[in-house]
Image (cartoon, rainbow, N blue to C red; front, side, top):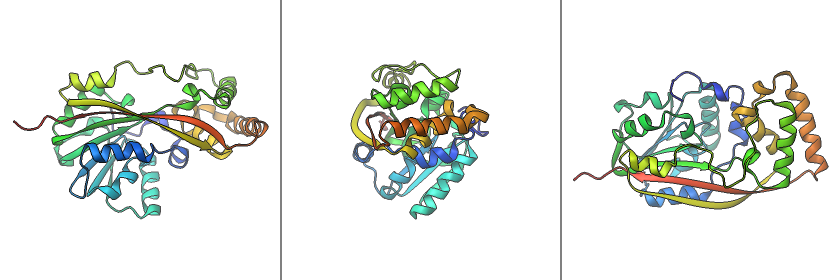
Length: 267
């Protein structure tokens, strides 16, 4: 993210991101609750919060959540979702990893869901040291992006169609290939976090036609802005493709990974 202005990679995706990006599953969030003893006395920072996929699910367990994102439209979607769910203990803050400072207060946990790869990673982890309670920690939460990493035939077909329209679509890779440069567990150790561990959770998701379409348009490299004037034609072709494949529901083997580490306790 870096700068606190609107996050350009997700321009035009915000409504789709809010409505069609899936959550991470109860097991992964329950793991964080147990690992960091989250309760009504805890404050949580959700950095790069998007439309609140983590913040809104963890809010009922803790005293307060601060959801922080550089994209104002994404924050408006998060506020709308919070109002609809009756969640009142989330403060939505416009800002990025470059804006972390003491004015935010102290936190037991800082989460980053599908966002850490956009950040200036080492400075971000260093800044978080000054905001975390001793024994608290950070958690990087991500899941397998099925358009380029899914192992189902229908995901391959959707990718092939998108590839006909877009010149710069990321290469489709195997589901188990690592697509980020730095192993994040090693990076946490390097930046002074302790008790670092990686937890992996497997779940099955089912997607309707509308959800498949909405998810594709929620991706930074498949945004409506990226398709430009061909957006409507692509959507028509995609819906036709999915109807030809039975109209759903389309099953996906999802993998959620949580890389977390603790702030060293005071001596």
